[in-house]
Image 1 (cartoon, protein in one colour):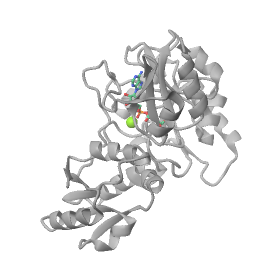
Image 2: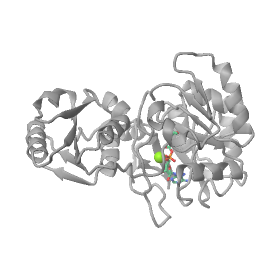
Image 3: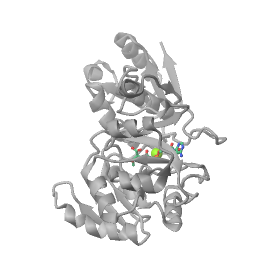
Length: 335
Ligand code: TXA
Ligand code: MG
């Protein structure tokens, strides 16, 4: 049985020593970060990284990022860092921000899918941060979900999927942000945003002057540019409009044509639906972001014949939420 360390209600972080030892020895550790849970291994150990791809069922053309705890680690894995790249790291590290840098040869090519770049993030979540510090190596850590499924932001959501596939698991409660980091790659001195997150385009623009939204090109030189699909078992539909009442009436109209619809609704609308199961996604965008993946999983767990989801404001962190919902849903309607 895989050992579970419960740090939800306990802040004795010296207990992370055992997990760090497993990382150093080439094992797999599932652990929380402030964005989503990660599935971690020594990022400089080719065999350990291979285990991540196997445990997730991840396509080996899809590169994995490294978590670091200080600048020295970054200089050990990345080279030719530009002034703008330093400025962005200074502004957003530690935090929910990943930057794609030129890699040094110490970084194994299996981690980067043979590309000459590597994604680097310095997490602010205390457990992730301490785990990297104690391990003394950059930790390769994709989101902890079976490939193609919603990211895990709550230990219970992912426990069963990984209990027989990893060496050690850390329960740190709910991830505080709930969606994966913003990913940026600087090309010709302009930040390209490859994945929107809770560090917004506007925040990056403030530092860099200008940005390019390049959301669908996370792995731009590879044939398939997008592996993150967050697929549900149930049919799923996203309903988008600037007019809240239009969203509600459209969803009611569609829900009426199904025998068991489940609706994921903003708090203000939960009593406006005529169906058995309505999931409350929350009020503000931060709250919606924090619970979005766990709500998708919850909706799916009822095995409905459709999950219908309200779109949210397409601004700030709402951009990141809508980016994930567009990927998760089979279809969308914009009215
Ligand atoms: O918040 C996060 O970033 C979380 C936590 C665990 O740190 N991690 C995460 O990892 O979301 P993952 O593997 O689920 O998503 C990372 C994305 C993938 O879409 C991958 O294709 C892209 O980053 N990526 C990794 N290395 C890259 C590179 N060298 N160039 C372009 N895209 C890259
Ligand atoms: Mg992922």
